[in-house]
Length: 259
Image 1 (tube, rainbow, N blue to C red):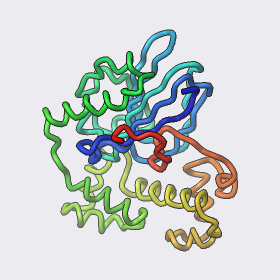
Image 2 (image 1 turned 45 degrees about the vertical axis):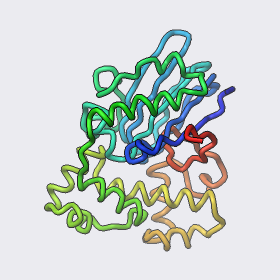
Image 3 (image 1 turned 180 degrees about the vertical axis):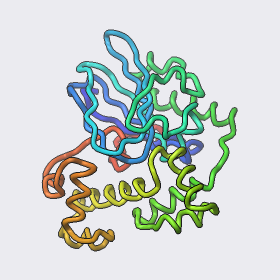
Image 4 (image 1 turned 120 degrees about the vertical axis):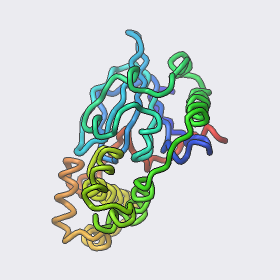
């Protein structure tokens, strides 16, 4: 694949839990930028020196992850809060960290490593995860509805509204949300709003002041502050460069295993 990044949607049975799979073969980069998105990833690396499987938790700021040149990388990006169905660890235990996957996975990756360069690798992942979901029926949580509500409102909900939707006190809601998603509801909302702003900046010609106003930022300065906080770059500089990162749910899907 010559280091082309391939992205695949999960099968219909997994779309409530998995955002997408991604694959980079014959990597040529020495590092990779990860921006906050509230998700947990499983990253499978295959190189001349062997295989390594890691779980990457939610991040709260831009992070540079070192890569090994000429290696193959395969990832599973779970939707916020949904890693609980596949990983034996609260998302809050993984925040801003990575851990070996072997002891934490609720399923076996089987022969995924041997097929990482195959056209069937995404189909194999679908089959493995589908079997796991079928065997261990996932239990829904009101947190899932809250996450969806935050996403749909572009992060402009109040914590009080979120707690009301969760049908618990604010304190109880905040505790469960952080445990399930890995970050606080307030921070997740800020990240969702930042990601919405970043999409508008890169895909439209709207002025920064208009974007800031539409997304409920105090002013353009507030928007710029959030970009430096989460991406370590100004909005103007962001619009002039291509920032790719492992956990980006806004990638163009250049490969779809369901087709």
